[in-house]
Image (cartoon, rainbow, N blue to C red; front, side):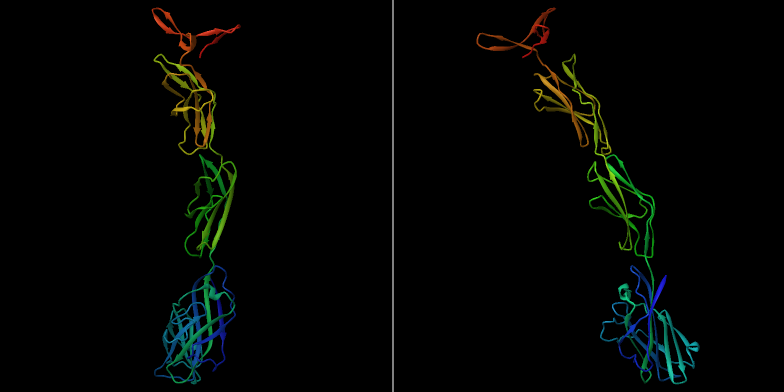
Length: 401
């Protein structure tokens, strides 16, 4: 803790304390930036050209700092009429302050003594008055202005000869070592920091705020926090993340940064065309390769959607979505092209197409038009559908209309 004192010494018999008068105090240095006032103490010396051994009081009305603390009246008040307190002017001490009668007064002391049986002196020492408004800005200069009103119940004028104001204060501090690091977990970025800030003398507690490269996304993280997980604003490019330690209402601030490029969700998949297997019960089993995904959200799996299309280029209709690598479906009534799309998070890939012929047909002329015919042959007492081929001059080719 440190302190600064502003003071003035005044000529005897010049400044009547009964008036609510302004005085200029100097000698102090400006209060440091961000200083927190812990106490303000006032000292005032005054005298009256009378003394008493019976009864009488010094009457202390008020003291006020311009734009700062005050007792019963602010500096801007036109007058000070409310008493802060009284001090007995009765003393048997005669000589100097060292032999003064001492009273407790306003968390300080009041010393009263007679001088050559001509004057009665009062010295208020380090009184804090429980004053209002410990405003640091009032002490931002090497000179301050104060007003004082002090008189006595004895006849005659009370004169003020010295005034001082002492401000005790501390300076808040914040120091944060260590570094900020980042790594990727699934589709998110984890920010880590190891050191705890050192801080004190200010108001409140230290907290953290987190910046995602575009805006502040988290405030008031507890000082015990060591990491924060967030979803990046984009993938594949560098983003500069920030974590700030704030203290004393945000007036003290330290920031750490780290630049990191998060990877987008990716899919690894051999997207060759699926295979089609005819089953004895008339169904088809469509099979495809297994894929694997990386950097997706927690719990993300590769999903496969099977499509059926009427041609090698037309868009297909979804048959179903699966997490397995095969599906058993009913055989189609018409020739069909099957393909699969694999999806992992935002990544996807589409396979080639496999054609499945529902029937192998030939056409015959009925005298007026061509008719499409399914070819059967009689075998072992039953008609069996056949797959027709045509010889093209060098080999047999599958024939189908």
